[in-house]
Amino acid sequence: MGKFIKIAGYVFLAAGGLLILTGYVGIYMKEGFSGLQEVLSPFNVQNLIAVAITLAPGGALVWLGDYLMERRERLVQ
Image (spheres, helix red, strand yellow):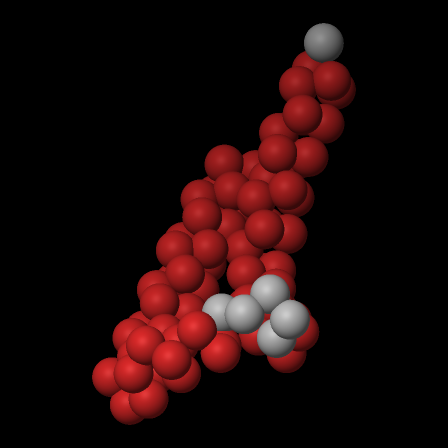
């Protein structure tokens, strides 16, 4: 179960990364390099929050999978 959850987490992380990358490519195509610079600015808190929300489910599933596998190992010993 832990391995499955961990793999699902990596799938979610990959899908989220591709979604973010696709959005950045769309911004670059529509607004050019200057528009992409505005979005990727470290002062653009909205983008940082959006990226964190997009990647959080995958990160949480990877953490949960690790936790369950470690717990199972402790219970077996």
